[in-house]
Image 1 (spheres, rainbow over the protein chains, first blue to last red):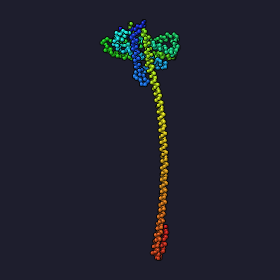
Image 2: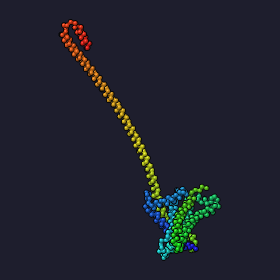
Image 3: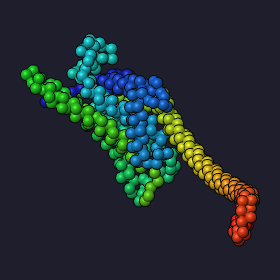
Image 4: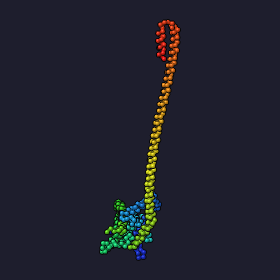
Length: 251
Length: 165
């Protein structure tokens, strides 16, 4: 039996529970994103950009290209900041689970916020390997979709729920709910499965450790690929859903 | 908690808030300035391209002007040379004509001189012949005038002297 790779660490606040490990890893990812980005914008120049600024500009151009492909750029431009942040956050989150745990059990006896439990195990954890994180991002996407739909079309936005017949409102409602659900489960599934397999390879018993280096390397490389693809897919789908909502229907 | 990885709790709102905070922070302190810079660079490049285009056109204009001036200068030089050539031709013709005239004049005066000298020489000779014939006549007459029969000879002699004149 494969046990769950990441032991769920619960924080209790009143009657509310939080996945402590997920939140800590989320914040670590955010910190990494911020370090990366602020290192890039430290010496901003409109002249010859530095290496980091160049990377950031490339990312912005990349996301801008995605928006351009899906809708009129003017409607999508307010989304740019959000989408770039989303792209970087998801990417860094996906990568975090591939990084070995460098705390060497030093925090093992720290009971504050159960940090000892959080930093146990052979590697860090991707916040995106928790359905809560991916669902949060997917919820934000669907809120954006509805919000921008209303903003650009007014009450007319709700009109498409009863097209071509009021009976179809059920199907449209399912569609509206299925969109964030598929987003959330796709990302979660990919990353979670990747981490499980990584954990399994790392759990190989003694004699297999050395031969295990090769599959670990291969799987890490593949996970990097998967992580990059999934962050791209998440951003592209978010853009596509928004563009469906904001562009006037042809039918 | 069992093996079920799909459990929802208050992590969702916590993550939403965290993520929104990240979006706000990054867009305020990173993306906005960065995009402003990119836009600035775009306009910079645009204006530079425009400036370069303007300068190219100006350079073209200056080049055309120079070519025009060059052409004019060359034409003028051609005209000057042509004029100078014409003047020199006229002048040389004049000089030649003058020289010709002069030589003609000199020749004529020389001919006149020669004529005069010859006339003088002839008249001199005539005078001398006359003198000589008078002298000869005197001598002959002195010696043989008395001799009869010589009259005819004297007569002929005198006639011959007369023909010589």
